[in-house]
Length: 273
Picture 1: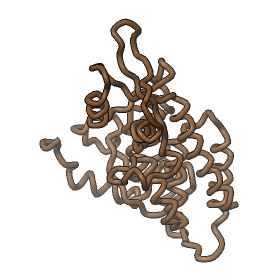
Picture 2: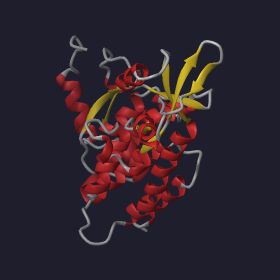
Picture 3: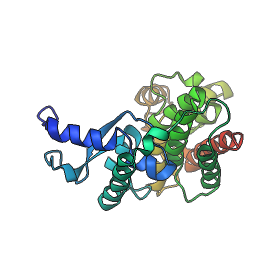
């Protein structure tokens, strides 16, 4: 990464000028012609190809989507971005971006259309929640809704640095402790009292919603393993007999988190209509 070459200045200037720092995907999906914080994307994913035909200015969110390799949804293709870039350049040449105004009272009609679309898509189980969160993030930025933006960002990137007690209630989950028996395989651990059981089975989930979706897509066992080396070591040291320990939870726990996020997103969008 340190040796990656910078886009030649004349080429960079041409791309930025033709796009006026507007994102072709935002323009296509939302009719959004506002200035974006963004980057120049290499459409063939080759960072050494500085041909202007291979470059497009995109907002940070849609650049990330374009570069991602997730299997959860169909990403934008190179031919698609090329066509959207053509339409954007045409709109900029016609100075359509000069007519964009920021409304200070009622939301613009296009925002209301975006809200309706988001509500409809949130009702569909076919749309990944991570995709919906990114669409909601674009809409929230347009509206200047900082409170929901903070929640959306945490769900998209994970709750790094957030203490377990401060996680949303739907992420404060319970698991089960299993110990390996050489004769009977993995067996549930029975605790002497309820207080101990509650202490050892508390399993908060702070990972990003995309990571949760990926875990569900790759799940084949009906459960997933919590990786908590310190807790596992502590439990192993306090067992009556030495044994390897796993902390497991049903995949239903992850499904419940995804659905809780979907419901909260749907409620927010519905209140905007």
